[in-house]
Image (cartoon, rainbow over all chains, first blue to last red; front, side, top):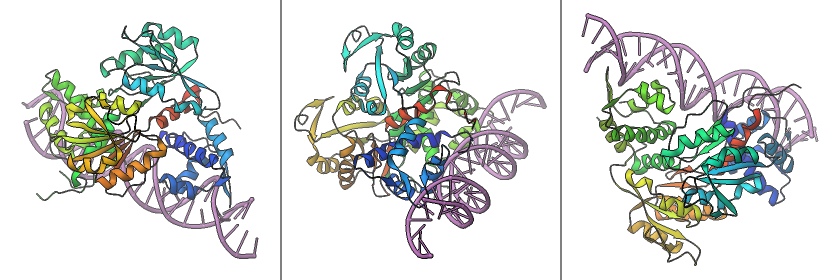
Length: 215
Length: 215
DNA sequence: TAGATTGTTAATCGATTAACAATC
DNA sequence: TAGATTGTTAATCGATTAACAATC
């Protein structure tokens, strides 16, 4: 166990480990080596060992990692040993898809409130949750102990919504809008904008990745 | 213009530049400096200049970058000066959201075919496109000059679908399923799995990012 | 004991940032 | 000319990988 600052690159791999470990657990595989993890996840085994060693000595030399134990530990590290309440802002197509797709549930993340600005959406039910007007957000976030906000509104509204979420005291935001949001440094933001991913893919079409520089 | 290998980190910033430049263009701003771009996009100006300089001398000393010219150039670099046809596999909630949300259209990316395995989905129309059975994928991809595939099927099906897309000759895949896909090296894959993003956010809740290591 | 695999240090690799001459 | 800003080299910073002693 070291007490260095842990980089975001490391943190983002933890859910990847967790997911695969859960699969192993389901198949009742008792232990796994960094070697095998690396192979399955396309990562360097040394990197995996190093990542895990930041948080503790979870493995056993000569044996590997106990699957159940490592799952428990990673869940603790990610704060997933308690339920994390999430608010979703933007009940459009994408927002509806995210709230239906409640795969997070098994990971203790739960969308407990949904907000929208459109009067036509308000009052309707998505996945058993009644859509509320954004005016009620601050109050609702405080009352329901909501700690994470998901933004699925049009990009023109994203900053406004982020400001409201911050005012409500949310600690982290997952932003699906294609905008760089300005928030105070204590609020963590992850961009989940897939248009960026998709457009950048186009670069790799057509052999453009090898330089054709003849000139 | 250098002919180094361009890293993916650089490529992924290009769509971010492009998006902001489009906004400037709409406001009819004629030129922009790396300084200003950096400020708005929360990036280091030197990094922006370096990124752009990989592809050519697009700026003018003392002036900055001509907005329209830079847009044109970045679109060329990203292969977006031609229409790129995209296939979507998986007509569930998320798939429907993506195909409705056709924000890519203005960037010359177009979802032209949608596939699903569920008999109940097949034949229905989403955003004016008829959902086809996966059995028709290979044929359809070839006929419609589809070059990118988007995977929005359940994770248990993702690898199978990826194999079919590869067999059909797709050059790149955007994968929303939470699985590490195995594909031949000439096919580019980007992971767009937001559960990873969301779970990793939980790490930052609650002051966990500063080490409490007292022991 | 022999084989396997960890945790960790050192080496490498790559990406970001600073600095500045060139020049509009 | 003076001020601004690029393109690029050099310096820095950080992340990944290799190597290996410790040990199950």
